[in-house]
Image (cartoon, rainbow, N blue to C red):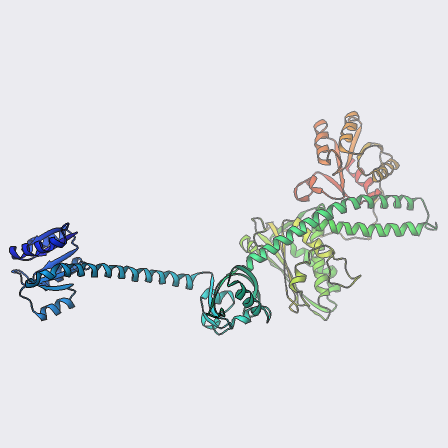
Length: 638
């Protein structure tokens, strides 16, 4: 420690130091007897306490007090004088003097110094505590007022005592004042919800990461996680509740969306496998039926039966096609398309049926960008959605179809991160019909789910829509509420803004040209024995020499033995031991000019990624008509 002694009397300074050394032997004492020495000492050193006389030959003690406090406001100053008065002592204490001692009572000096130092120490502690308290209050105020976590305090009866802006925002209030007018019980979805919450809190005393459903002031459902602590009186009765609320609504929606996508993907894998096997069986049924019909006349007793079998099998084939669309396993034939043209074409052909009791509005984007899609598949998507909208307005209403260019950021936001980076075209189909509740909306894309009466729908329409849009690297979203109509939003990636003119051919009365045969050698690779036999017989009847194999390995062996004779390979995409694409690669290493025709009930991705048929590959979807097979073979050979 360092003590500064200010006195113009050398003897008096010596007396003061001698008296203090008995109590403070380890202190460094600095003595000042003139103004110059005082200025040097104050500038150079820091002291723990200053002791000054009142009457000095260049100043008085009150002036010394002022000089010291200007430079070191926290250093205590004690006046030791023999000429002071009571008035001077009072003035000094008011100005910040720590104590006042007469030189005639130096025995009191050590105690006065102890008291001054202790007083200063306590003052420092107090100032630090006040500063920490202010900082703490500032941090708490910042957290309370600016944090994203909702904070509240309420009574056990639900009366809100305080809340922060985040709490008001979470529950849809415009301010904390408005929120404080609401009882907490009104923010629970059912009248018993708040009572159930109180019972749980009274039992557990505090709830950590407690998940529950609540509602905003307007009844909109939200999902929250809360940490809540109860305050109890001496009788263990709940009197007050403090809580912290986190809004997890968006995360819950994302989790539900992911769960639904995973469920649809699992169902899709199962459905595609079933559809593949079923298509092979349908191919056999249709093939043998077609051959049977070709051998009997319409007057034959079995002709009607065979014709009905063919019709039923064709309907079953259509259903498997829908299942493959849902599971994203059908082959697309994409082209550059302006969706405005698709809608205009659809409404010109289909609009009169839709408009029997509803009003149709089409609001196209004038400079709509171009998408690369399968025209027929997208037309099927729009037709399904328009028919559903029509059925949802049995008493009439308005159907609005809109197209728009949408930047990636907006599309990404609405899809919650499910879209690849690109610009998008948005097409919306909106009705003001009966709408759907949340539970129905969560299942509409699942196959065979329908809200229509028995016999009015298969439940495959929207599942097929979902699969087609996903196969085109797009996204479909739906907004609906009971009594408020439904809006489907479809996002498809664009490829540019050049003009595309395209008119689909829908001449159902055109007579197909006669199928020509040939004398080339064709190898058939098909693992289903019934279908393989049918294909052999049908092609043989058209004059072809046919060799067959049950899998890719056997097919490769046959080709190696007859590579100079075989003109075309007809192969299923999925065969045992060696897939169709692997067989294609192996044969093209031997002869790169050999022609291929792929057939399959699914798994078009064996040819190209995302099930889109690459240019230059020929493909025939199972089940197919045997004349269609012969026509395709002739087309490829020519």
